[in-house]
Length: 135
Image 1 (cartoon, one colour):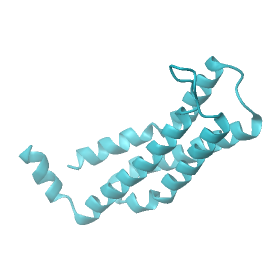
Image 2 (tube, helix red, strand yellow):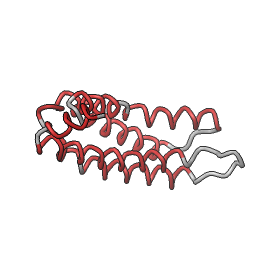
Image 3 (cartoon, helix red, strand yellow):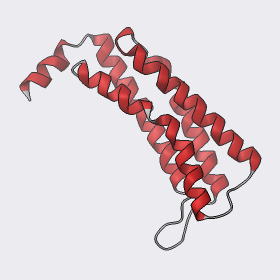
Image 4 (cartoon, one colour):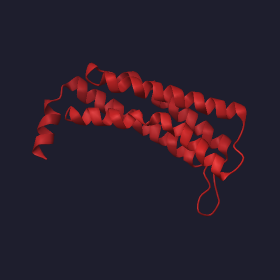
């Protein structure tokens, strides 16, 4: 525990600030994801309409995108780019779904939701990079 605390304290102020900004970006992205998965039928069959869930997802992605530059520092630049591209790709896929129409059934909807979330995986690698840097 102390080792991690020392490493965190040893990180530069700029890197600590970048990590806080990264966490804010991830929080926004997680809210976007939660909005999207609210379209999946629950145990009782209730769900949010796909159009409403997709709107929340796109809005959350835009909010996450707005915070990207705040955590771009040289130490995590290699991890930053895939995250930037992932947000852009997820937004493109969401827009395509919005313009092309709704999936036909539960199986198709589950696949569509998974496809929309897939580009956001690089955020896990970015977190790992921050951890390697002691944060």
